[in-house]
Length: 99
Image: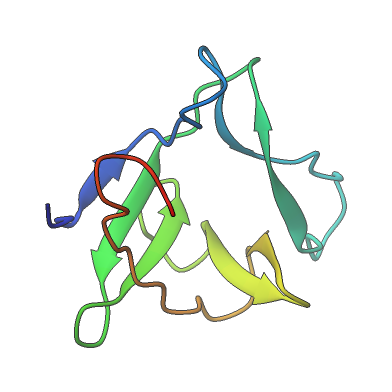
């Protein structure tokens, strides 16, 4: 399986009806970085854009510069409206199981 650039909804396999979301977002400017979380209230479309090699940048929105994008912050996944996106690699885990 290979991932292609496009728009995805990311669901945890063990949490039916939930998806990967942004938030909560505080209504101040400049907007602070906020954590990515699993929740069931909204559907957040994630845009995967090819970066370097086999890596991707991931955005919430349309992949524009001011959209929230995935950043690695102290070994946790956050989104940032102001920082440059980090590159992420997606690898198959073998039949959905990690051993």
